[in-house]
Length: 305
Image 1 (cartoon, one colour):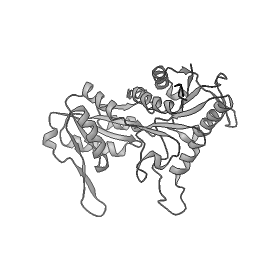
Image 2: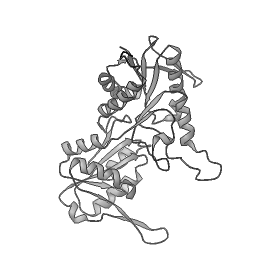
Image 3: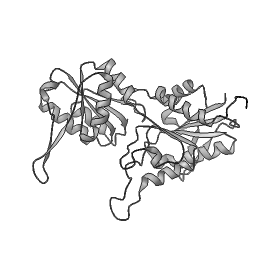
Image 4: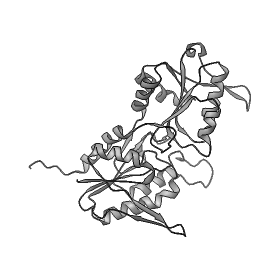
């Protein structure tokens, strides 16, 4: 095979599915840590002339980034023709400006770090704000894979009576996209300011939601605070128990358990971040399409001149 997929351990199931779709051989990275904390990575030495696709979960990026750099550089030393990166969850995208004096603007710095390591990048729904496109940050080829088609298909198959709920106005566009694909209604919570520090949320039309299963949708859930507050509000309206639908299940500390305690009937996520209890939406089919496009750009044409 002219393609070798090198997965980091946490995304092994996604990587195996992706490799089959890319007709790639899987050669997992060997990664051990010495007592002093240093990393040693070991790769399959048979990489000469192949296109390498590294699949890395960057949920805890500070503990992974250096090993990722070692993998990419070692693959090149072993003769890889190209080295691409599939990072389904792309961190450091929110710090895209200096919010306080002296702060590092992490997004472009991290982008440059990755550019020094790989030839191309594929990710899923990066959290972009002031840089609305990946090519505003990266000089290497990139592909932004949208999770909406896969999430909509899950809703259609599992919650046909759904009404999608967006937690704030920023979510309106992509919650609406999922709802349109799934052919279900949606609403977005409105924030109502009642004083200098008092803010409450309100569902614009609770009557329209009655008899339907609320599906609260968010792209990234870390502490879970926003989604928990949304669940509490829906409960006060006497609606059916809600399902939480998440793209990137960051889930700091006990966020997953607190969502269930707050009344979520179930919590469902894509597999961009490994979580055994909630990963139910596989992104490999959509990632494979993006990878094929970038690999085709790297492959010399075999047509006669």
